[in-house]
Length: 282
Image (cartoon, rainbow, N blue to C red; front, side, top):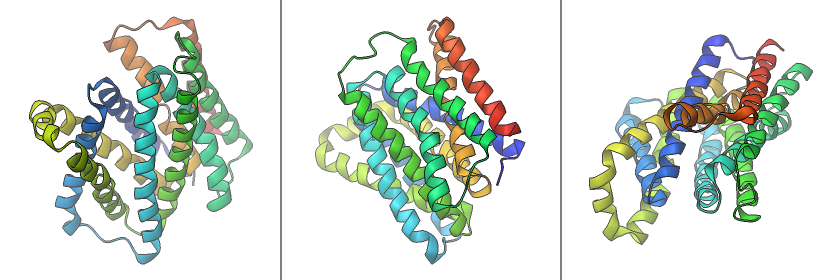
């Protein structure tokens, strides 16, 4: 199940979108309410669409429910990682370890064994992404906690990628799986916001609904593209291409935020691009 170039372009688009909504969450003054509103956008979209899409078959539902659970655990750990660590350090480590973990889990649970060339490409992508951690100051800022949270985040990413990859193939309806997954994902955060932050919720939404709705639309689109790619191609390939979102985050920082490129970032970007090329021609 190799990736054809149209799928490659879809996953790269998803990577750009993923970097964008993560930047919105990280830059928010209230990350919990911001992310809750972003994730709720997907739930409301799905609620409006659920009557018009096929229902996944019975065999897919254990994976669908597990995917909802793992995604929510990932979101909690991700927000904690952003609380204690810098985006430029947490994000590359979390996204960098995921493709190799996906390759291992996909080989064990889905029988997808990458070729030697593919493993080389995936490894180069991971090395390039993780090396971006070392392109800025204060790597040890926050002690051991950001490191542990980033690693846990990466493992959750790998877990939901494999679970959703298997589930969407069993579900016999990519669109149905995408809609039902989005329907369930936002509910835990929405309930937590109502219970814990009821008095602040409405004023926050009045001030930020345009920003969070836009970011929520981006989130739903980004992972919807990834899920479709998972239904068509090898999970390890999709994961490696998706995590180039870190590279796009660097580009956004340099072009739009005026951050310095530097030779370390340039070298890391070159390694990532080389890995993607090797992955595709392997």
